[in-house]
Length: 286
Image (cartoon, rainbow, N blue to C red):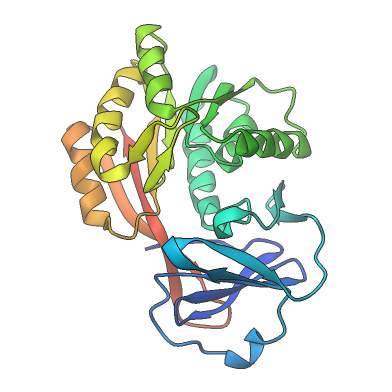
């Protein structure tokens, strides 16, 4: 398993009984966590929190606020800053475990010593990978695509916060599959492709996405968008029903040449030997 390096002001204090206790700067929150199928180690720390996300029927829920909260919090990793806030579906505007993938991307880009690289970031959320790639000297353009208008605006704010507005970042609110099909017709190509698809979702025009049905067809299409000298394709999955081996098999159906590394990723729990699993990452390089 690949694990997260330390953020400056984010950590998981404890986890267990399908919940996790997180610290964002000096704010404590509790969120549901289906993979925390073990016991809490620090039960006394769970009582004095600022907010709790309570799951209700049909896997929905809402935040219960117990103490005054700022409208947003700036989370810091390395030289980057990201806006965090309590949102719908228990989201906080950032997936902290993805920082290890940002580090890996930057290392690959740096070691390649290449310039004029074109990056496609799909299901791009609030732009963590967009910031990581746009801050690299060798990157000429980042195309950031997400179906949610609010998330794209959030990503724009993160890019601005990191003083990267001078970089060539193109933001698009679009259905990923439809966008990719148009790019194929336009004969566009990218040296780097990043995708972080949800288990289930809908596009701006109510287009249905189900990862078990649509991931392999999407990967086949993305293979057509890779340049003649691609650097990498990185896939991240949070779907608890898709194991690392299942993701590996799906990627092997498409990428039968080159190198493929598929690993679980996770976040160490503070002052504990336990690691909270947070997803699976597949990395293809030629």
